[in-house]
Image (tube, rainbow, N blue to C red):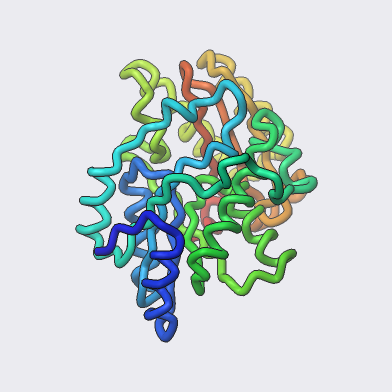
Length: 283
């Protein structure tokens, strides 16, 4: 495996691989089993796999955990070697020394769900991902479905800007107890981790209510009451269309998805599930 830190060096290396298909797996490091699933999917779909590790300050708002975000590069290297990654790209800084003068902006799709409390977050995401796309020029890029809003926005970015890259979603990976895997899970104390399980549990309960034919209004009311009783510091619990991110209609559809975000201690966690369990997206 090649570990490359300079843009030009990566471009030179990949120039010899253009006859093959190239997959990019963008990450911020602190790799876990969820990231491994992305890498394995990339290896199934492409000849050459590039994993990038870059903690992008542009997607962190003031007061968020940019400085504290876990950086475990040596362990990440071992995981990438074990999984047969071809190139690990770890740039020191993708932005010019005098700061960001030109960037991308998300419209409307960032005004819901995580975008409400994380102002500018998705602008930072699309800007850095577009930079990585320009540098690597992959045939496809793999993103996890845990960050569903991000995945949806990146698919729209590729469509709107006519970028010749296929954005592929990979199924959310959970711990044995149901907690959605996240690099931030390591922030949780034992008691906080137990509390975090309420997030996946309520999504499953809401799925069960949908299977019984309950109305969406009732399903949401039960979910909110359950999380309030558990003393969860809730950001949002919503049912939206997974393709447009617009509010779901009264009649259940295959594209309805439940989204939740909450603060558990000092850690912000997100999760999502399809409302109709038997129609879960496994792309």
